[in-house]
Image (cartoon, rainbow, N blue to C red; front, side, top):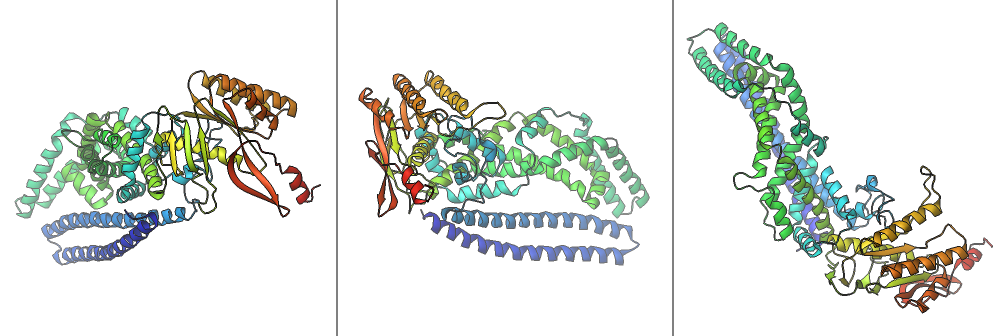
Length: 589
């Protein structure tokens, strides 16, 4: 398989050539439509006053024009798809170069009450979500956010296989994304499902056969008109009878049209997405199971959804004034399409929710697979149910520049707790977020930024970023205590990897030292595993009485009157702090 940069450049070349060819075909299509229009006008002009020639040219012209309009629409769609594919590949090149500004940051998912997402910048500007999100449906975007927030440790190896499988299908992923992003979908899936479930039927049962009868009689009347067996006036009377029948239901027809027209693009989009899912040979068990949800022994979901999209498109032809008037007078077109829509809803509305869920799943896993493809050098953690909680070499943060990033090794066992000390800006907080993100990524099956990794699956909970809550009249200190209480409560129900950064900041130094020590003792007694970063060196003394606790640090050195950081994770206690040096260096004191 090609490397990401090479692949994206080759795709740009392929799609650029295809786009240029499609543009040429569109010019030809427009020319043919103009020519047909001229021929129809000339035929009517020279055929006047022969009603057979006039009426015949109008019908043939209308049919030809509709065919050419549909063909032109198809070519326009193909053109837009190639443009979207070019946009997708150019975006990926930008992301590989470190520019993620064009991606959706997912600000709406920021939740300070979540066990870890706010602490590790999972959502928002320059977040991990923004970095990996390539979803093109709202349902898929919500699904991806849910996956990142899930904090579950089940079926990790199956998730890894699913991501590996979809990562190896870059053309399929891009085609899926292009199709999904082309439709102007403004109605949420939940609204569509509610409309289908609560729909009020109005078309009389007789309309199952009446439009066919009317259409048959109209065909006979046309033949009789052209053979001059009947007069044009008699044919006109029959035509207005058809319009009258349609008019009896016009108000309800218009309402159904307005409702169905809003969801037309969604079904046009979704049947194509389902079709791509159905026709792909997946190797992952998880992907196969999702695929089976849209494959029926009798009829595939894509065909059922396509049928509905075609009905909605046929209904939309009423907007063509010439066709709309003729078809409703001679074929009862609107009533026939309304009946078809109602029968489809009656038969299939209960299945739609499951099909839409499958699309959301694949849309979200597209993002995960894309991340894995872009980072083929990353490794999938080896899941060891009874081994180290975490044993990683060369562990780094995936969003840091690889040329500047400093990677570290870490081994932490079950029920073990690390106290990390270090100078300001030495790398403590970055390391905490690196470990936390590695746990989240591992739990959802993603490859991680590491040379090797053994991992015993564990849920994550953290307290790294606390703020005042003015609306709740809660002080900073009380907010932090509330978060620590949540951690203690969570440990009573399940096992968690705990990450803490400088706790009890809202109280005095002596009280903070005492409180921090008691809290660490509480966590150790609960057999918790985790890390706490602190500037309080007195907390490190707890290792003398609690062998489960180990001291680690990040160093800072002054070399040639300049502050130097190596950002390396080391055993022991930090002895070099930098606040006084920086105050003096910056001329503050």
